[in-house]
Image (cartoon, rainbow, N blue to C red; front, side):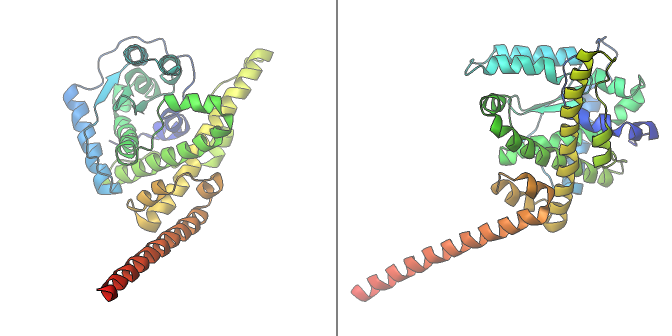
Length: 317
């Protein structure tokens, strides 16, 4: 599958659509399925193989991939929320998220609480301007991106679930930490998807840039005071989310160059990252090296104490 020039030109919307959520969805009309269950399973298998061969990421558990319209995705999430215990407003949060996340910008999403990937059919068709073939071409990069999130959840338990939004709302100071973590996850998934596409011979989505993030417009104003305020807030949030892909990509690219996929085990073991470390990889390496040295020194001291104790016992006998 090769992205058309038109799709490459829509890269900011496509990249943002992998995570950003705004309220207000499409008027959903059920169309012919873009792909059969067999086609979807085949694309998922090829995406997994490409991640293993191109990025060194091998999932050790299967992840269901479901093709849904935005309306069906919202309904499924609400039914899921209704079937769990309502602790600390979790059900209400999931219910709200269902309306917010599956909108006109959401191509796909890995749900860590359900352990499933939603691929939003009508959004793919919309981004493909009604051309089913163009829409189908987007499936591969969408799946490789979301499968990385699934892997990070399986391997590192590193993907926040909706319940974590509650703690952020209760502690606004945690917002920057969540933003930094999501920057790592989104940039890493985008870069690994890029490597997987290259491995599979699929033209990847272009690398996101700070200029695209700065100039992106997600909500246009009609000139009224209310819409000026709404578009200002919405575009500010959207640009901040877009920057997650920019800064996270740079960090992931440096990390892969430094130690490949195995190095990410060290990254996840040394969370949280500061925003400064995310934006300057060498700062993280310095902290990681210092902490590793301290751990080795502590281990050596422990072994020395144990050896001395054993030697003392030997003399006593």
